[in-house]
Image (spheres, rainbow, N blue to C red):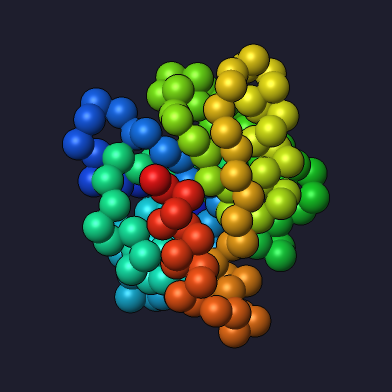
Length: 152
């Protein structure tokens, strides 16, 4: 069964999100977590939520908001990612964000293609995925400062 994770409008004070934060696809969540929201209910989500707690006007989403697992066939994975790209394209077109932060180089590559298709002039910035920072014991304060700097 496919699990859909809802994108998050983070402390929206305007009618739209000013900055998009885009990951690849949902990861595993704690069994106790009932909400299916992107970047929520796992270590990466906890880390991002802590960093963003005082930020406003963000839209947090993934290239694909349907959970892809090791058991997902390659054919289905590519179809889901293609559908996700089309949805993200429409979201970007509708919101016209000032900036897009991509969590990882694969995401940046796809978002660059989307922006080119839309013929829009939106800065696309690549930063490490929070799971990379946590998994490889990277400097969390430096990472937090980098994200907060890019959100200005």
